[in-house]
Amino acid sequence: MDAEKKEFFRKRLETMRDEILQDAEKTISGMTDQNDNIPDPNDRATIESDRSFELRIRDRERKLLVKIQEALERLDAGTYGICEDCGDNIAEKRLDARPVTELCFDCKVREEQDEKSRGV
Image 1 (tube, rainbow, N blue to C red):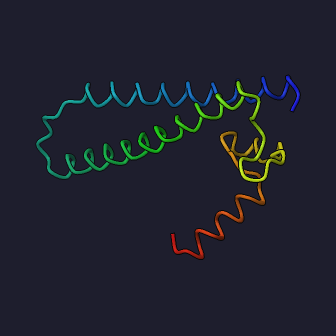
Image 2 (tube, rainbow, N blue to C red):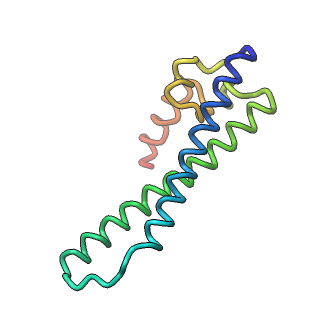
C-alpha cells in the first residue's frame, strides 16, 4: 500500500474515532443534564428504554474504538492492509467497507464458516 493510501486510511480511522468520542460526550452530557423528575410512568419508561438503547450503542462503539486503535497501530507498524491469517494483501474495497478489518475476504469467510459449524 502506498503512502497516500495509508494516509487516507489514517485520516478515516481518526475521523471515526473522533466521531465516536464526540457522540460519547453528547451522551454523557445528555444523561447528566436530564431532569429525572418525570411523574408519568409511561414517559419514564420511554426515557429509560431510550437510555438503555443509547448505552448499548456506546458499548458497541467502545469496542470499535479498541479496533480503531489497533488499526492505527498496524498503520504505524507497516502491517495495515495485510491479512493476519494468510499474509496476503487485503483488498482496498474491503478496507473501504471496514477499515478496522484484520482479515482478507477469504479468511473472514472461512472464519465465519468455522464459527457456524462450531455453533458459536
